Each structure stands twice: as structure tokens, then as C-alpha cells.
Length: 246
Image (cartoon, rainbow, N blue to C red; front, side, top):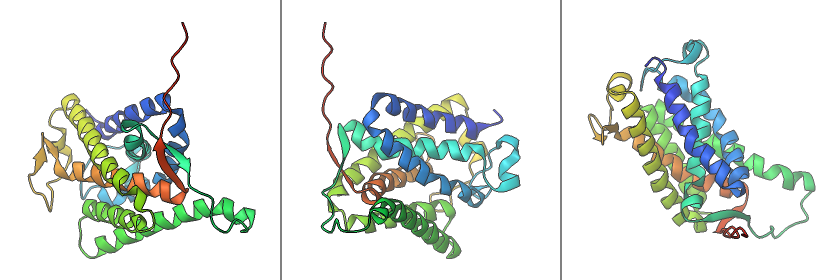
């Protein structure tokens, strides 16, 4: 198959679409995390061709440094990694208690979540860049940066520790499952398109490079913590839908 990355990106949209349809209460969270993930599309130039060599639609990776596939992939990944915990454990986002100083100007209260989100994203990108400059391969630099910033946010939001750990495991499991489907649809794709791992040479789980599973783990950890911290919500038990009459 010529456009393997496009197929993988579409596969990642499948669970995202299912969650969107089944859990309307999570749609705002999915929109926010999808929007927050978009700046990371531009980092594809750091992965390609050092980490892998897929074919991009219209050769956009060679032209501008990233492709349509990156956007689709990140939207799908951010959607299911940020909601995996809430779906499996039947939780829903609810606002935290109002701040102790509600006298702040309305414009500041409205802008604050976006500024917090932007600051965290910038910090992840900066930390990943610093690790890359220090010689850390890009995938590990990306995972380490996501995990480090998310861990720092847990210092302010200790209530997110258990959700973030469970979200990381669930996201990694779903990521692995999607990669297994991908490998079944395109036999030998990981051997052809992915370059040998630098830190985990030849290591795979059911044929999927451990690097990819590690990336899913880091994404789930960060995506469970980040939006809850930035937009001041917590996870509460979701109400069950009332049974239909008749």
C-alpha cells in the first residue's frame, strides 16, 4: 500500500468517532484536546525520515514538513487518549470549585484557560527541543517531554494521579490494538516503513515496535492530565442514561 500513514490515521479516527457519538458529554473535551494537539503536527519534520519513511499525500512532508495525515492522526489520538479513562470508568468532566478570588476581570477569567493551555504546550515543545538538541532521539524526547510536563502538573492536581495512570495504560492498549489492525491490513509495514529503534533495538510487542506503544502510553498520560488542569475540571461519576419507555 502506498499511503500507509493515511490508513493508520483513519484507523485512529474510528475510536474517536465512536466516542464522539456515544458520549456527547465528552465532546467539549475532545474538541479542546484536538485543537491543542494541532501544533504538534509541525514536529513531523523531526520524525521524518529519521524515525520512519511513510509516503505522504501530495508529498507534503517533503514540501512543508508535515502532511494531512499528521493532522488526522493527532486528532484521533488526542480524542481517544484524553477520553479513554472517562469512557472505561464511566466518568464525566465537571467544573472544579470556583476560584477563591472571583474578583478577577471577566476577560482574564475567560482567557486564563487558553493561556494555561498554550503555556503547557509551549513548555512541552521547548523541553522536547532541548532533549533533541542534547542527542535524545525524537520519539523518546517527545514522550519524555509530555510525561515530564504532565508530572509537573500533577503537583498542582494530585486528584488526577490515578486517572492519568489508568488513562495512560488504556491509551497504550488501544494504540497497540489499532497498530495490530494496521499490521494485519498492511503486512510487513513496520519492517518496511519504521527505522530500527535506537534505544529499544528490535524490541516489539506482538510485532508492533515498543516505541509506538511507549508513545501511546505517554500520550494517554499527558492527555488525561493536561485538559483537566488547563480548563479546571475534574472527573466525576457519569449519570447512567435513563431506560427507554416501552
